[in-house]
Amino acid sequence: MKRVFILGGTAEARELAARLHPEHVVVSSLAGRVTSPRLPVGAVVIGGFGGSLGLARWLWEHPVDVVVDATHPFAAKMSEAAAEAAGMTGIPLLGLRRPGWTQEPGDDWRWVSSLEEAARSLPGRRVFLTTGRRSLPVFDGVPGVWFLARSVDPPDDPVSMEVVLSRGPYTLDGELALMREHRIDTLVTKDSGGELTRAKLLAARELGVPVVMVRRPPVPPEVPYVETVAEAADWVRATE
Ligand code: NAP
Image (cartoon, rainbow, N blue to C red; front, side, top):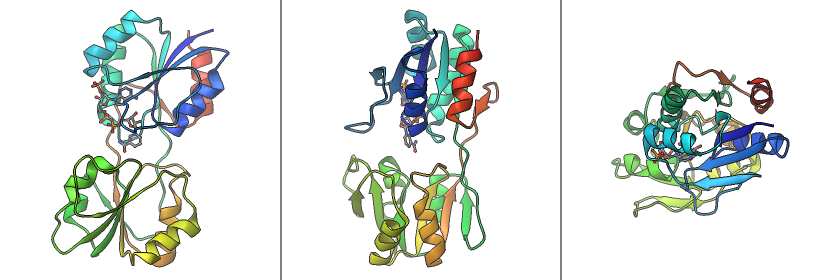
């Protein structure tokens, strides 16, 4: 039996907890960003640690054999802190990152390296924003552009955008209806990957709508990464 600490907030993190529990003792950590998060099985701690030192202290003070960073591909600060804390404590760390999306025939994707670059390079004037509520200030006020923003929780501060609150998974029919209703001519998304939110990309292809795709931030080079929950579970079982 291993004591496994999962940095979570993703479907893969919940699946990994479910796969390891109750064979292993699983504790999952959530940032506490959404008001009613989907909770994994096992114990859960909510709220940050205060950077890499705070996380290292937490790992020293709690019985943990291995850590899996299964945070979202865009949670770069947390992944960096996990790498540093693993270095400080010597506790084995694995990264679990689902693969990014791949462009297919008929897709019109324009890759950018940041949200700011996305806001500067919008090809249309009726934009569907799916980059999360904390990204909205970057786009709010871009002249001549109307935005439909979708997020799980309402924006922290008022924005001059139409906001639709919902949480995936989404269907192709639903995405087509939403994009048609609002006469969307541009979709902005992070390259989050995964099936739960992929339907918007299929809808964009079907409607001939260009997609501004934000590239993933780099992962810490010293950390080994796998792409599937099964591989992560195998690593936990095999790690001494
Ligand atoms: P981030 O920018 O890398 O992290 C910011 C801070 O939030 C971290 O420094 C840490 O605070 C705290 N934090 C992040 N993930 C945490 C976790 N799993 N447990 C405890 N504290 C955590 O990350 P983010 O983009 O804000 O994402 C926060 C959470 O939302 C993650 O769990 C991620 O998996 C999930 N999520 C993110 C996105 C996205 O697009 N970024 C999308 C879906 C879900 P301290 O420094 O105080 O430790």
